[in-house]
Length: 129
Length: 129
DNA sequence: CAGCAATGTTTACAACCGTAGTCGTAGTGA
DNA sequence: TCACTACGACTACGGTTGTAAACATTGCTG
Image (cartoon, rainbow over all chains, first blue to last red; front, side):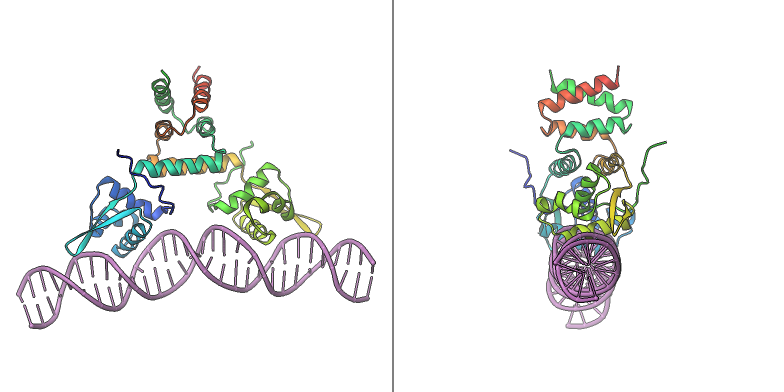
């Protein structure tokens, strides 16, 4: 069994997501390492990263494993689970829960390229033998 | 022509969205009418609706047309435009801008019912003759 | 005409968010 | 050993959001 979920309840914010992305990319990083990965891109200071890490720990989204005097942070929720939750939220809020409406919207608004359509078509074929 | 957009810049929040939905359903309503439509469902008081309407006017998301002593509120942005913007935001944030990835995810995570799949399939047929 | 009812405007206030500085403590190099 | 540094914890602070009460104005009804 390996579906690490726990819907977490607590919402992850935009800034926190940037941190999560770093940890999903590579787990078990220190605050300094995380900062190295995002601070310049987002214009943050190390202090900011530390705060975000602390809040994520509080929310139960990541764990902090002691390693000497510092901590190694690791996601407790899988990226797929988070992404799934957010997607569902959007579909619920904006499309009355009908995922097909979302796809329809994307298609109509030209948000789907020819390649996208082909990809989806292939996907469907696979899903419906 | 007739694509009432203006990306609006200002983000519409969850609570505000409930109000927008009422106005998208039927434009030109008074605060009291909007309240009638959402207050019980959301457990709000009229005061709350008034605040949200004021904030939406501030953000340029709706207009307030004087009608005697009160105002009739009307959306300034089309629902489709808002929904499109939010969808794109999600796709960008979570799927690196690849809409097909979103569809793939929905499919894989069983978020798509048999009916959804059929609907999407029909849509695709229509889009790719 | 005098209150009452309806309506928008102002103000409130706690929780949350983005962003960051300061403090305390515990290793570390000289 | 002793100053220094790396690190997490605590504190801060302005802005936004959710939720609403207080206030002001104005039309209506008795």
